[in-house]
Image (tube, rainbow, N blue to C red; front, side):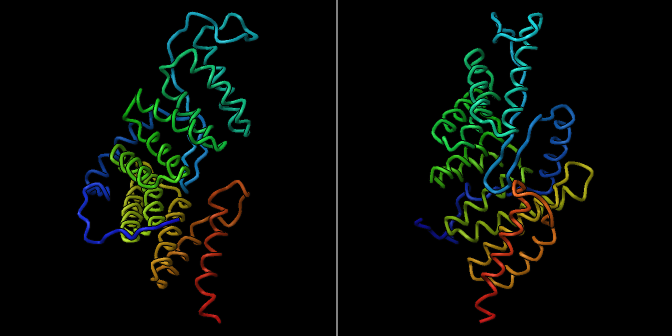
Length: 289
């Protein structure tokens, strides 16, 4: 990969999304209010360039049944709900092809349902069908251009396709729409680092940690300790690659104190712990020799 250093003298207004403490507080209060009315039914999130968030969405009544179901007396909305729940269940079990087929059926019968496009896009992404995922994210944003999570998802897709500059634009748009989205900031910092824009990456991680600490000292949203662990791990890796080994070691230690000691291979945070240990060994090995 050809990497470029972020120019320190750049004054681009697009590069970093800084928020004042007051705006973070306002966003946190708004997030709390929204959370009390809306809860996603399935959330499988990886804080390293991935946000898997398959959700329910209401729809209009259709003029014909969705498909043959055991109970012929179900309303159209009830039938849709059953199909959507089946798709979510298939996705949770890793039956992505079956889930894609169900969401495709739902989209064909209700092409105005935003979450169906986003959900199918996430499933296409999981199966490595990035072009199809991008098409679905584009359609979801065409239907509703204010969905922060979809911008984050589309940015992940751009990263997978190798278009890091386009990914940065989408991560920043996601942050503009939801300034307290820690995962979008984490993804943005990793992307800056991949472009060797280390200063921008460090500033992004710093701000994400500040927001996380604020959220964890209030009764609002809160951030899991493992997410902070990922932030310290990625900031440590950035210091490591930038040549500031003392800061790197300190951040690796902070990460290890927050990442889970036990877990399964499917647990991203548990796997990250092994990655941090590998990075720490890589850093210390030259000193031992």
